[in-house]
Length: 256
Length: 318
Image (spheres, one colour):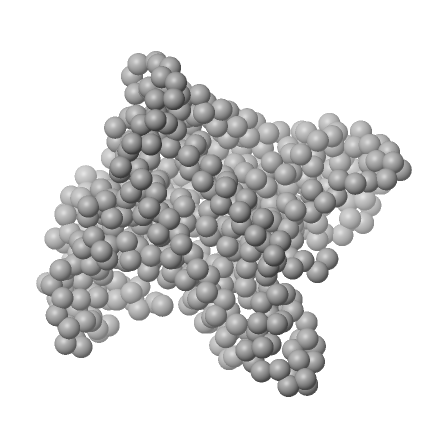
């Protein structure tokens, strides 16, 4: 399972000529030139793309946490006209292929002059378009005893207060799951970045990596592996720290 | 409750008594305003980011639109062109092959490993993480880059084959008969997330069923087919529907492995990749929109078939 990953890691410390001769996992002559060379191989140092990605990811995480938790509270706790209809629509959007909306969305963002900005990558997250997380949080809120918010209501709290003072503090695990999944998925999202970011200065890590593949046309695998490893480190760390939540989060959405 | 059982329970809960209706109407009035306030961001998103663009793309699918000039109405032209577009037909074939081969393999592996892990072996958490990790990394460009090297002419796979005495000089990704297979393998490799869902489902099966069956002398295989499979069927169904939908949208892997070409000789030209080429490579936005709607119809029909067929093999005990 992890052999390809380990092999890539080991190869990133090998001179390129050796990569093509050793399927093994040991390094005889460790070199770090792949990292120093790869870091500066594109028009910007690789750190520039890491920073771009970080900006997008932070925006996406904040957006998803805010908008999805608000919608989830409404679906899980409030009774309002048309709720069943909206809820079903929300569930269906989880299964909608993105291609059906990507063309007009592109046209819309193009008209607004937002191509080559991070807005198309971040704004939708503030509008709870990742319905998967709304559903995940609805599931979680349903598990919180109703007595808690009913008690707060009797004490004279409005919905705003109940949400902020009762729900948000109790929703920790659901919020953490959302944050980690959003982090990982946005970090590796290639399609949206490819479409909306055409200026190399604006590239996020996935698009930068792929232009790397073009510019060195496969001749410098060592440097490419080194930068691949760099791009995977944040995902790996998020996975390591968030594993508990990730497993729970994915299990509850699929469970009965 | 999963998304899917939730969807089917919504249609079931329609019949209500008049008293229930009255009570619900009263409660509804109370929270109406707050409800829509909390829902506002999602509603705006639904209209501006989802439904609006869907309507627009339906309109655009009947036009000729290159982004530079305003859309020109062309009636059914795009759809007629789709009928005669051999590359489109090929991309449908490639995508179907990919879905039909990789989804069952991936789910079968996920279920098999989940059953093994459920036996409560030592180091379960470690194994679970090791199997789950590729699901998290698999969508990244870095892994696609790795795959491209692994299955290239001088790649890791050929090095390994050489070590056991098989000499293969051509790269797997540059051979039309194997290129798609390498991407299928990448998809199967990411079986971790359905596996985690299966594991959670297996936990919910009461142990006494197995004990009773063991007393009756049922073999391991009988226990698996008569207890595990039926009780797990809603979750198998959930994974199946989601994985089919996901697989139809695969893009990154094909794009990176084939360097955006869908080659060699269109053997990895996924539907979404071809749509991207038409829309964002050649700026044929009308044609791309028509293609997007064909995809919606295909995925919709397949999901409907899935739901229909599920009546015969999925058991809900509630």
